[in-house]
Length: 239
Image 1 (tube, one colour):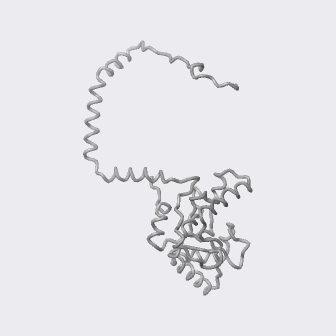
Image 2 (tube, rainbow, N blue to C red):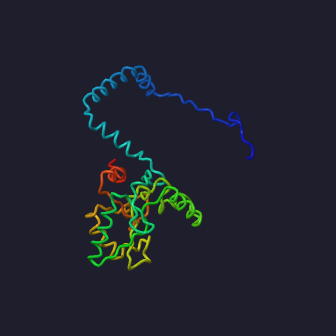
Image 3 (tube, rainbow, N blue to C red):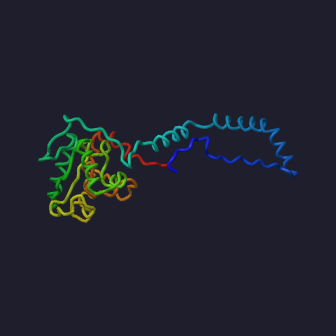
């Protein structure tokens, strides 16, 4: 088994021919004789249907096909890295897109008025930093790429690279940071009720078939740029 065989060395079984020896073979021969005529009739019918077909269904079909090929890698969509001039520092080690900074800070202030204390865990992450996170943790946890991608995006495929994503925790229950248990906190319940007013949306809910549930991960959709970036994520396949 150690040597590679030349393709000519492989045994290819001969196809067996079977001959019809019953009356039905006469019908088959007639069908073969008239098949060009039948093909012509079928072609004319098909052309007639195409001429009468409105462009809408055809465009919808093309659109659906394009949606299937959305360039995902291990379930994640690609995102370009935001330019540095569009980032602002809202607190030590936390940078976000300038378009969402005011809404994010206003949301935290409104939460405090309700006795809820939000803590920002992670904002903008460069593609290089995402690369370090993805590959180093994959090695530490002895996980294959596909398994690790359930909880961490490959470099170039993280919403954090856009500057429009923010990881949020409950300041009174820090043990739930980056844990699904965060959904049991007052902070998460407040976000589910109020985040939309500030144009924030939970990115990876329990219904996501590609990525594990992340109750701490929210993205901003309150600007035209953000809406364009997340258009593919918001698009629902209707096939």
